[in-house]
Length: 164
Image 1 (cartoon, rainbow, N blue to C red):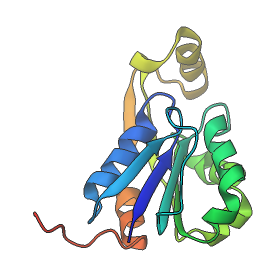
Image 2: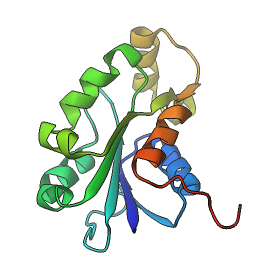
Image 3: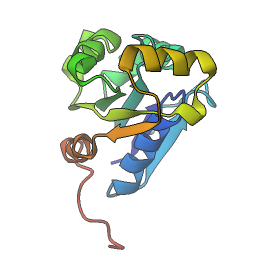
Image 4: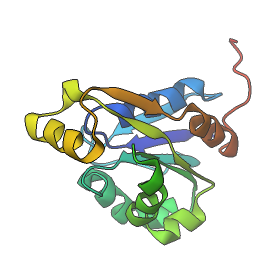
């Protein structure tokens, strides 16, 4: 079964999560960063894992456009959705807002993978907003490794690797 991870990242956390998924997958998994590649050929793939992160209440424009433009193909494949988000109490609401209902219903796996505040990657305004809204003044990581494991299981990517 051929799998691709299509993601958009702003400060690198979603890419880090995508890499963790690819590294833990039982077979080779391709990765596409929508910031670098605008067009993605989904035809060769049986499974598509889609990931993004929340900034100011929404996902990246490139990911939103990818989903809108690829919807017919996505609904013919096995898919997983993951969202990098730091706000546990609002995470499910944000997940439901940013991914269309038809896609959420079709997905074999839907995961909230936690997130990070990476002050070293933020500009002054972003740092000020995080300090004010979240009350956090330094970098913090809260990646949900259990959610990554669930995604791997639900997408049948968790069998032992031959070289392990």
